[in-house]
Length: 314
Image (tube, rainbow, N blue to C red; front, top):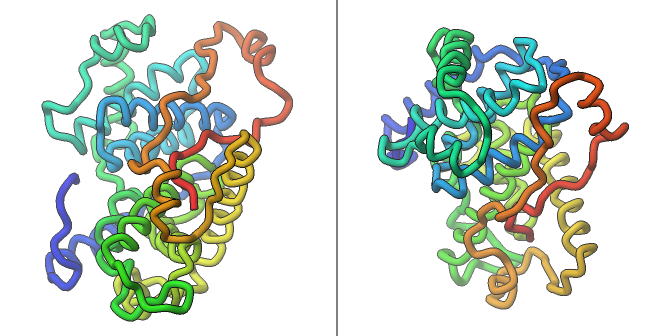
């Protein structure tokens, strides 16, 4: 499903979008009842960092998280099997979304990660994962809608701080980076599991326009292309902006002296991560545990609220 979107005015692009929207309507709702939900944040961190290291596209990353969420939501799994499952989700998603030459090799991953996983056991898990979805893993994710919605994310009559846009290319660059940032936010937090992928993407566009002080926040063209009115997006946007504010406070709390705001100035471009990518370090869960007693000894009574710096804040 890794392809370049035709122009949004193109009938083919609209057909692709409508097909993805129809498919997401048939996806089973996640219950969020998995007993392994505690570990989700750490494993999503690991997937983000590994995708960055091997230069896998965002579709592969989002699909890997989608497979993990849907499998653990439906099936019971021991903590000791999580390493194998998350690795399987990564490789299966890579095979589906990436060119063959970019797919990480199992042996290379094992050498790099220094995980003691058996290739035969991996194949068993891969068959189990694919069989669980009847070999149909073409799930639409928020990442799949991004390029289509970005074509209308910046309107011809948009204003910045009440003034006409003087450098549309620069504004679009900032807007795209912020949308990528918010898509990372949506992967991290389990609160987004209740929203449809297309609604998450549309909300990421709206939240980015809010942070960059672009008016109006939601245009007629965005409404027409996404099929979402403003009131559909508000619950998701509120969560995105709350988590965005937490990231800003965490960044300033870590001793950062750089002022970060919605300004489009060159000075702010210099203090932000120009790639919009994830960082190079992240907490890794101490897996596997051999027993529930060992697991409980390592698990705090409350889940940590801090999340890694996703690389791009406004």
